[in-house]
Length: 339
Image (tube, rainbow, N blue to C red; front, side, top):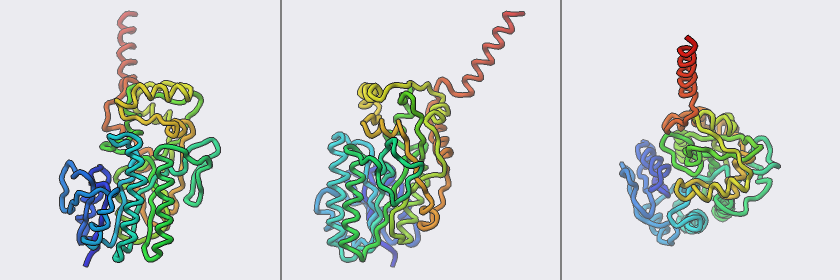
């Protein structure tokens, strides 16, 4: 008999793609996908159950389906239609209810939680690279980073109450890829990219392919613990903007937030204080444990993940080939005029 895996958040891209991929694995008997709305692009071999993890009914679903593994992929960094309050309710209250359901499921043996490197925050006191045993130097007080900290706190409490369940927490870096839609990819899609004056933060990315691969590895191999999941290397924000061929607009921190209020709602860009701090100081994480203990080797580096994302969006007016073409046209025009 193979495993029966419940995956939350299958209406989102990450949860849906992962659940459909996992359902094809020969060691998996069934994949039960849970969300309040069905996936837009079909379920494949996944069994979809319409349920809200914020409702205690999720416990009945787990017991009825005889779930032995739960993959909690519903932790969201992108505000829901109801705004940041709705996102917090889904992330924090949803996790609490899901863990309460897991507590009541005697057959449960493994819990995998998608977390985020945002739990480390971003400040001028940060180390060059965070390792898993470190805490945020300046604890986030609001927004998604605070949500993630609360989620992980509840997960640690569950692990203490159910020592018979293997708990794996994956702290994923910002995802990149041609079909990733997140507050950060929306930021890079802006025609004019606002930056914080006087700062050039280090950025680290995770390709969507590696996000799926790390989740699959954690689900199939029962490796407990907390792991940073990220591509190798870092990029400076200025490098990323140049590769997109877009003009940067350096602004004081308060002006970045003000700029965000004019475009954030329409473009779904996050210019919260926590995101402005990230765009000021950046963040880097050490992914050694991902390799040595979890046993996952990323396919894409940080730069390769960003380049794959950049290849799928409209190029900026300052892209290198456009600049070279303009220079060539100008030189020809001047040469003709001189003749």
